[in-house]
Image 1 (cartoon, helix red, strand yellow):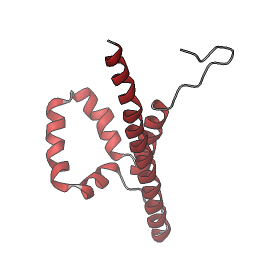
Image 2: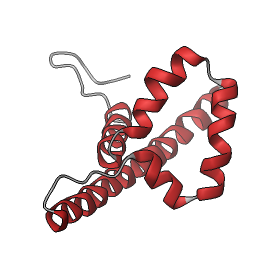
Image 3: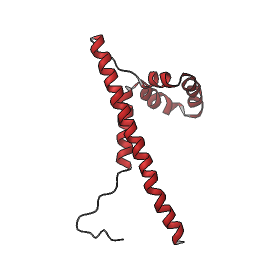
Image 4: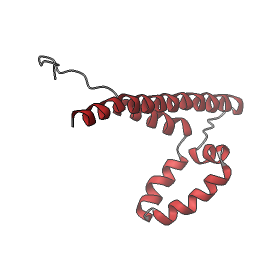
Length: 120
């Protein structure tokens, strides 16, 4: 039984590393999208934001078009219209940045409590 506990503990740091790397990549992508939107806004002389739906369509047009009917079929209407539609119209850098920050926040190691022993 102790061996099963040790293998579980050894897998956890690797999983945390993978998720933290994903969070950092999302933040880097959000920064790149912010720079692109800023450059387009300066060139146009007006605010130009790229919605998440347009970015996903640029990345993989066939999969994005196939995903929309599947989501509408499996996701309830009260979730699709207010949540997913607004998420797809939000700027890419906001969605990627928020998701990356959330992943980094969730995978952060717990800080030791002050005044308590950290021995296990």
